[in-house]
Length: 119
Image (cartoon, rainbow, N blue to C red; front, top):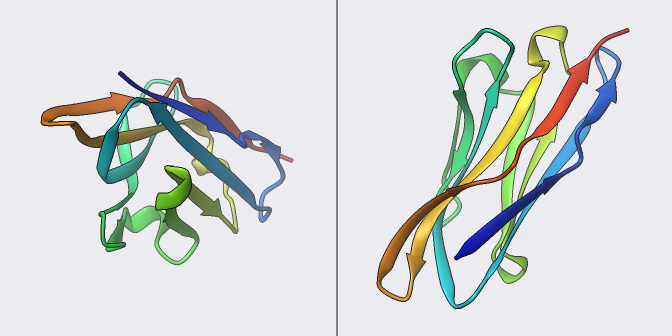
């Protein structure tokens, strides 16, 4: 079993910055890809950013140029640096990881962390 624990959410003013972290733990696993998703009240969960095992990243149009996803393979951790935050960025942010435990694939979610952008 691979567990994902997110941290770093909170309340920030418009134009501010936050960095989210998501750490994976468990026994003998390999993570191929990470993703950050968000879900605002009354809306569907949407992909914000994703990064592959070799560091190739892609972003939703709404966050391009403002958010940066990165990963530390040694720490089994993914980050989301969020800058120039807007009220529309308010949501619960979830990390997702997919990979293998030995030869068994997995696709797991974190518990979510609230990000609120408000003055």
